[in-house]
Length: 443
Image (cartoon, rainbow, N blue to C red; front, side, top):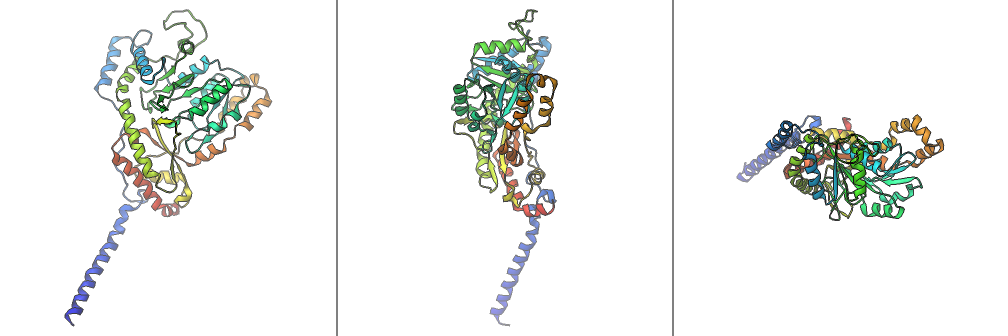
């Protein structure tokens, strides 16, 4: 055998060894196998926990405990929080309440909403937005969703207005402002107050102004999952002193001032915040802006990555939205770009990769409890059968129906960590897409 032939055979042997090694390593790309099929997950560590606390929360809590003034009528923590939150948002008045639902409830009461009235609401929101309308024995009128933004479609509001409409109640869903330019203009045109449901939108802005301060009133929730958190709690913001006084009286059992006497000027309820809640909020408030900035930066980075993945459409913000609170990070999932993998399977695969994800809201306008409510003796006593039958025909929301089949959510805590966390989220989505046909076979 010639020297050249020997050299050629050695080179072939080396090359074939390399190929074999590559082939062995690829199935070792079993590390690339989806975790739901037995592979290694993209992420093993948990995302940041919530709430974030330190010794200051304990100190503030114990100060209230040992001070013995647990009720806001005796203490001053609720008052100090109201002043702090109003100043931060640029509002004249802030009223702390027991929760976000009670803030909305008191606000509708202050606006005089009652039996026979209609209130414009979105179908893509938490049930409290509708429950407060029903508590006033008014009719919620659903206006379809803009799927690109997940917000109420302002272009469809006017068509839903009748001579019985008394209020427009948009929701700044997930922390992203609704289309306030259009909504406020419709309100002015039809002489309708706008009540902003900002329960998920702490520090969000519309054209540089904090949401909750542009309408007649705005409401927040401080429930355990919220970006500013005291377990439960809420607040009403307004620049209208008469509306503030009406809310303040209603939330304090109809008393005419903040006192605890037995004189009453109207009907009311006990919707007061405790001093314990307010003490926690004053401490949690010290972190809220920095946490918000972290979410914004991470969300912007994540959006750039996800927008490059076919079939993933991050929620769009309106041009007037100058700050998004990112209580939720939302996007639409197009299964046709994932080999027709059902959303439920996509979510299960993501969760297996260590990326917690959920499907979000179901169509609120189709909830069976609405029909049961309208069949009740109280509603039948107020509303003619024909009007209730017409309500059913008026409340079809096809765009929202489709959104509820496509939506995917990440919670705000997933945006609080380092940028590497965003890389992991995007990598997991790409991984699921790359193995979608195989995942479909195993469905």
